[in-house]
Image 1 (cartoon, rainbow, N blue to C red):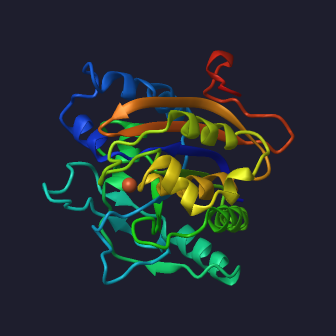
Image 2 (cartoon, helix red, strand yellow):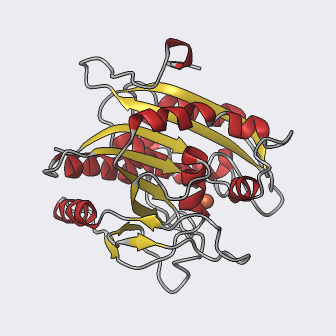
Length: 298
Ligand SMILES: [Fe+2]
């Protein structure tokens, strides 16, 4: 059967894609940011996931005010990088996994999550920047990807609790797919940031790190954070973090952190990155990790 073996959380700041594409990822400014992903690139090489369910938000590239799906799942064969105003990123097309995606869509909808099904769309930095951070410069992405888009751009976004529950339903869906697949789920976006208005540049290190803490172990308090708290404490774009809760919900009751990275600033945001294992109470497969790199707590 298919199984979710790990969860990865990461910011998807567009500037990271620019730095990667212009080969500035090791300069004085970007070096400390990208260094926090070196461990994960090694780990992904040993994990060899077959499929990533990649939770992200579109930034007016595939969707705009004409159509705003709250939750959308990509069931297509492939997705091209979107032109976000400077031409498409010169990165590989994203190859889908239609069979698993349709299975997950069916399971979710019959589980009463009213997913929008997308067969054709371009994917923007929200999806391609995490792939670059995790896999670097490659001729083709080493995984199939099922895009799962969440509206966090136009009010009202879904609640954290609904996102967590969607993750739980995704876990059930994947576990009922009758093929031996190593599936990861990634949650992207965040962390604290505000792009406009008098509070532009707002960053809240303390809140961000409490959020990272809350993803580790068996607590589920994060699912109950109200929208207004994200707005007050993490700025107008911090609500992207509800997408991390879909990832967390898909990992079951308990998690252990394998790797953690937090850095300020990146552009005018805080970036965070976390690699989690589901803890099924039967011990961990620590493939690709070492005791020194195992981060159980900050
Ligand atoms: Fe975003």
